[in-house]
Amino acid sequence: MKILHVVRPVSGGIKRHVKTLTNTLPEYEIKPIICGPYKFFKKEDFSCHYNLSINDGLSFGTDLKNIFDLRKIITKTQPDLIHAHGYKATLLTDSAVRFRKIPWVSTLHNFQTWGRNAKITQVGFNYLTRNVLNRARKIFCVSDALKHELINCGLNESKAKVLYNGIEFNNYHYPLHKSQTIIENDKNYVACVARLAPDKGVKNFLMTVKYLLNNYQSFVDWNNLHFIIVGDGPDRKKYEQFAWDIKISPYVTFLGYRNDVPEILKSSKALCIPSKYEGLSITAIESMASLCPVIATNAGGLKEVVLDGSTGLIASTDDPKDMGNKLVLLLKSKKLRRKLIFKAYKRALDKFSDKKMVRETVNFYKEVGGKNVL
Image (tube, rainbow, N blue to C red; front, side, top):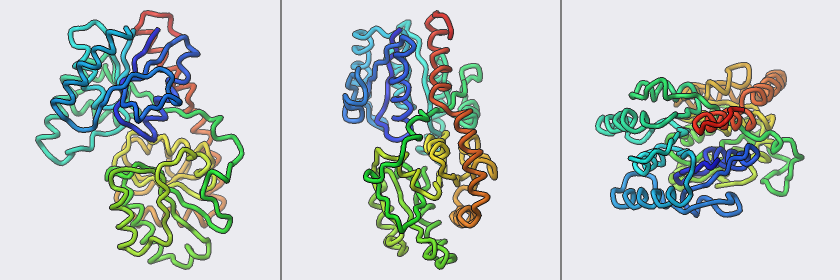
């Protein structure tokens, strides 16, 4: 069985999700084929890859060329099923398979955030939901919160299936390789791992640091706290400048893109997730597996991963003060920290393993392909 994965430019959680799937599918006698921008999917990451220069946003000429190129790739590879990842890849896939008898599915990883407050854009998104997503065989939603938003926008409920992301736990059991990180023995790190874009709330994280320095300066200095931001994105320079403007830059380090996130999480006292919108957050699951306690906002699917007071702490969205207070509470109480770490690890292992995610995905692939379901 051959599955063609169509993927837009991605990094972070979505890329790790696709890599987990494509690395594991051969164990089920399924051949994965990746179709997306070559610069985002180097050969060492994916063995079978076709270049498709998908860009974010809409561009009539470029998108039309991508549709024709994708049709050629489909003709050449003859997949049994096409699996699109993200809204843009879904739109192109729907157009490319029109009038062809090739089933396709889509995994949507995030909430639609572009033009959220613009009525004309929201109308366009609702049209996309009703007239494109409903043509898919199934829409995989990474959280129940995302599923309900899509249904409210016009997705047929029978088309929607919640399929949680999963991680490979073996990656989080190896000893820490300090040479790969920024570890300094005299500092205690608080991490924020995110794409540097508005919907991830990184500016709010910086405001949390400012709040702590204004109200808990002695606590920050006594505990030698240092705040690290892992990830890259279009707003990196703006956030770096903002850190200077509010006079917190000596306490904050922007690490950029890193491939050693598990090591960084193992070395951190806490992970803060200040997202304004979030489909699920693989980073939260990775932190739980790394025995690093999580403080997250109540945005989107985060509440399905982080259970307040049990597997982590929940702060109000767009409230840097609340996140700061929750962080101080966590760092002051060793008993609370131990409880959260233990319960979070168990929940991550039970609910968010890569094996569970892949098994459920393969079940549906084989159901669509008329094979025996595992």
